[in-house]
Structures are given as C-alpha cells and as structure tokens.
Length: 183
Image 1 (cartoon, rainbow, N blue to C red):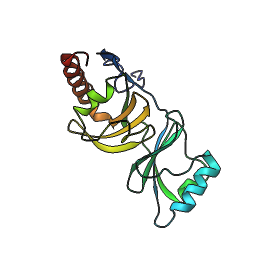
Image 2: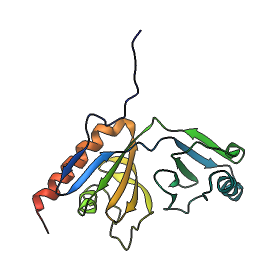
Image 3: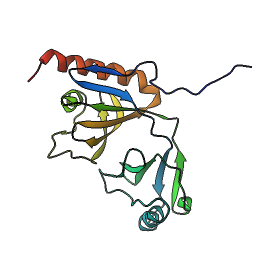
C-alpha cells in the first residue's frame, strides 16, 4: 500500500522574492467556515466570545490574529483560523471544515501593495485598507480573500485548486514591480 503524506499546496513553489517583496506559504492550521442561522448572529457572537474569546467580525474586518482569529469572509460568513470550533457553535451556525481547501500566502515588503495592486481592484492605500481590514475580491482572475496583517504585510487565500495559478500571477506582478525599479 502507498505511504501517503499530507502536503502543503505550495510547498514546492515558494518562497520567492523580488524587489524586496517576499512571498511565502503560511499554514493557518484549522480553517472552519461559519455561517450563522437566520437571526442568530448575536447568539453566535456571544458563543464565540465565551468559547474562543473573540467576537464575530464586522464586515471587512478581522478579529484576533492569523495564528488564532476570525476573518470576515463575505455576507453572513466568517472563517475561524487556527482553532477548532468549540462551545456549541453548531447550535447557532452552519459549520464546515475548510482546512484542506485553501492555499494561503503571506506577502511582505515595502512594495507588497504595489505588487498586489496589479492583481486586485481593492484600494490598498494605508488610509483606506488598514491593518486588520479584509476583503473577498478578485486576485488576477481568481476569487480570493485579502487581509492586511501588518504595515507592509498581507495574507492572501485562494482555493487550493488555484495554488499554482496564484504563484504564477504573483510572480508576474513581482516582475512588473522589479521592472519599475526603485521609486
């Protein structure tokens, strides 16, 4: 019988770096999509706070950290990252394990926003897209989640099936940034 081993979606493709922008794969641990039942938002937020110490995020925001947090993931959806659902969340919401379904990268560097701006319509200027802001958007031609986690650091999530395409698109964007030289 074959000895199968779990693999990260991007383990043979990353890290990469150009123009001081670094791209590396990130393992967020458990990923759980949570979708509150109708009119159960407040009860769900209370249950999350009691069990995890974190509130349901406002639209376009993240609570906690990338090590253990909750990411707004669209209308009436959030992604628990780095923790398993506890405290009877399924009494208030539909809960679905997504741990193997996503490829996740961290993009970091002074020109990271410049590279991402080549791929997404999101306004990434610091006064507009601030730390802990998140968006479900397009990245290249892929559906993605984009979160600003630091001054010049972004977390990008795409479906695992698009892992190679993500690296390809980011590589082209980084080449474009490098071609413009230091500004």
